[in-house]
Length: 326
Image (tube, rainbow, N blue to C red):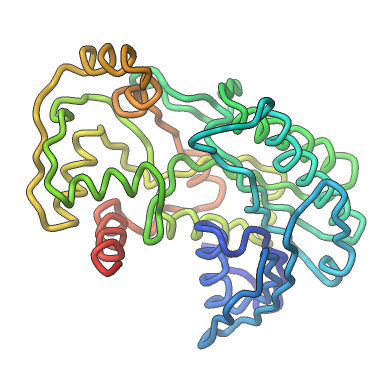
């Protein structure tokens, strides 16, 4: 695996976020110099071989001046984004997603190229590909992009604009599309699922035969750092996962094992579950539980000589331990 050079100088956005903080900690462990952009002052991470700087920017905008932040930077890792909003209140959510995920991203990338930054690593999303895959037909880097929601559309538009910018300026663009990321500190639906399993709630999910890809945070971080300052990653698009796809039923059983509790899963036809959820206005939830969404990481492994360093069981165990301690 390629590791960051000891003199690598990185600008990291979204440094206090779930993924960004994971990248920061490991990059510092591997002796990189990281300038973190955050909305408020960050606690210094000590006991590492790297050097951490912190720049406070309460808001990132399409007209943000990055000149002072980009001085001496070799690589930008852009994690900051407007992510899924569970209860959207905006009359035009796509406009808000575009403002942050497209316009603000391209503003940063354009200034990075002007400052002589060598590489721009963009954390995108598998939602650029779509929301589900047919059985045995995982997404690859060559699959047509078919984003279905505002978040996926904005990420796709950002990818296109970045690739065009890279072509015109010579700055190397690396795009990484993760599926659902889990690990210590995970929130939203994955956390709710783990809490339900931990409480021993009976769930009608004992006979779901789909397959879904997930990625443990430390596996995603490993790939990002493998791409850092790595010519093999220049102007490339990579999919990432743990390399072991699970059905919803298998995932819930694995979560129960990690939490040290019995799995209370009741067999229930997925077609009926989807019908009932649709009638209740919750079809999107049923689709995530019952439909497949797989990615093929063959290219990622081949081009970068990379494999996920952690198994699913290890990732779930670390996640479960974090939940037990909170």
